[in-house]
Length: 341
Length: 147
Image (cartoon, rainbow over all chains, first blue to last red; front, top):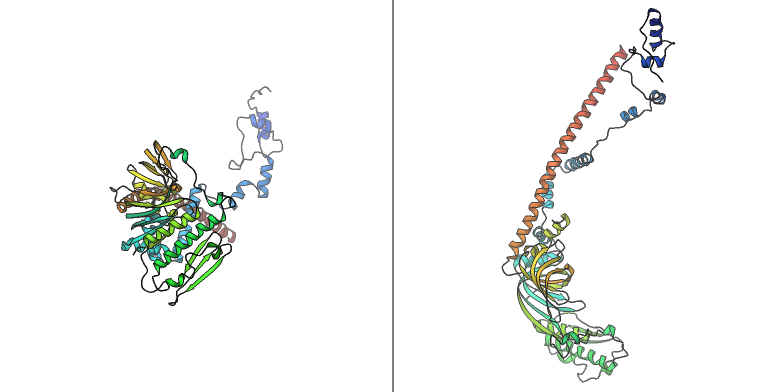
């Protein structure tokens, strides 16, 4: 559409044009006013709307701006929200614990700086098992740590405890270690043993019908005898004779390993031991120790571990001892911790 | 750099002691009775050890050499700490270095917190001024109404 030519306002047309350009008159010509040089706007501060619908919603009070004013204004930054929330929480806590304000600060400082040393001290205050470990660290006691293999006891470590943690990882000083090492078959030559390498047969992978039952029973008998020997060594009273209710030369059949059997020996001093012999388990419970002597059974301890290990598999074991100056033991290998001597 | 979780583990468990052995020659006895002898190049928060110039003595007794070796933490039974290291002091040193880093983080945190608090104050002031203006407006209207 071609642009209209500007008309110079004449006396006749001026009134007409002014009427046409007057927004309040009924002769208002919007097209003309759009292209006119100057149009008198009655209220310049009035709000501008893009369409009539907007104006309508404003009149009803449902437009966006009035809604915004009704709603509380949100802070734009997410960090600001977090900060305000934290500040409010802190104020609430401070108000509720106005007396313990200093304790709060200390606790916060301590929480921020927890180290292994602070944790050890915490254990020292508590009554739990780790308090014993803390005591060993503090009093520099020599401890005995029983170490495990996969399914058996490997041995023990005797040393002075420097530090520990909740997993029972332990740093020991001046350590004497005794452990069981499986001895290979006939040859221990490095070259040939590659071919000779055979997995130690576990009872689990051997069919019970393969090996004669007498062989099995023989093993069990040996174990039982070994344990009874240890018990004899430990308790050197005359009650040893009562242990021999089962004569040593007794045949296995008479012992009847087929089902679980309890053989009780009661001592005159009130110590009772019971030997429980079930199919594959040999456990013995000693209910109370006799007064007086209990031999420090380090060698005997290792012997009993050795016999137990040998009873479970067909492997033979050697007891090996070595000394390490500083040792860190990973906690999952620890069976028990006790104070030596 | 370690994650914050790893730092927490280092500082709160015995991993700090092995961390102090970084750069030393160490013997690690594994769960399967084999022994690894070498220089500790890195220890992470979970006690995994990576070593270099390593001699592995298998449980059967064979000696095998490796340039790089990685031990998963679960496989460790013992770690022989070298005699030159004083265990207690070494652990304290490691804890201090890691706590120092945490202190730096705390400082940067407090700075950002201060900045946010200034922003919050500004917003509060603006809100206060707005409230005042509204109250003034309502007060202005009521005397007019009365009048």
